[in-house]
Structure formats: structure tokens, C-alpha cells
Image 1: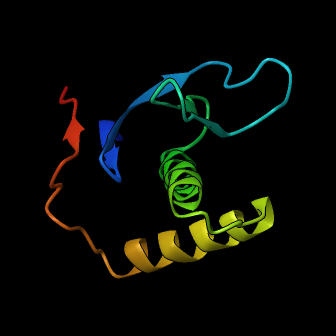
Image 2: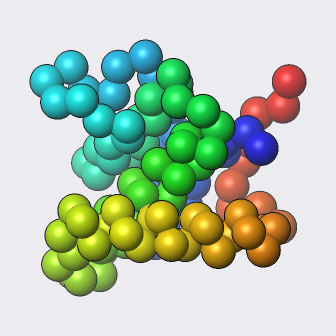
Length: 103
């Protein structure tokens, strides 16, 4: 399934961009730029890793907005577990608010 080109998180719209290099100073699969409204995902990864990385970055924004104080390992574990539930149960929620590119 293609990644959406944008997602809404707590009233804020974030573009989702596949890039060759997420962060030239630190190797990362994905990165959220809270103030810029951008989520960067490493384009070289397989599709499932891209999807899980997007979920991971969305969780970072939810953490920031809600003041949960999650550690990076917490976000990683939650992203892996939630992704597995969504994929293994073929759960989708109609794409409300998300837009995708076709073709």
C-alpha cells in the first residue's frame, strides 16, 4: 500500500516524503520535523519498513502533543506492536484525512 502524501495529527497537517537521506548526521529510517510539518521516510527500505516507520514518527508527534514523555525505545516498541496488529488483522479505517498518490 502506498504511503499517504500527508497525514493529519492532532489538528496539524504533515507532509510525508520519501527521501534518499533522512538525516545526513545520524542514520535514521525516518524523522519527524515537528515545526516544519514534515515526516521524512527512507526511500530505500522495503514497503513494510516504510509503513512501520511512518507509524513510529506519528507516535512521536502524538507523544509531543500529549506530553506523554515516551522514550525512543517506548515509541519503537509501540510502533512495532501497533503495526503488527494493523497488518495481521488487515485493519484500515477508510483513509479519513489521509491522501495518497496513485500511479
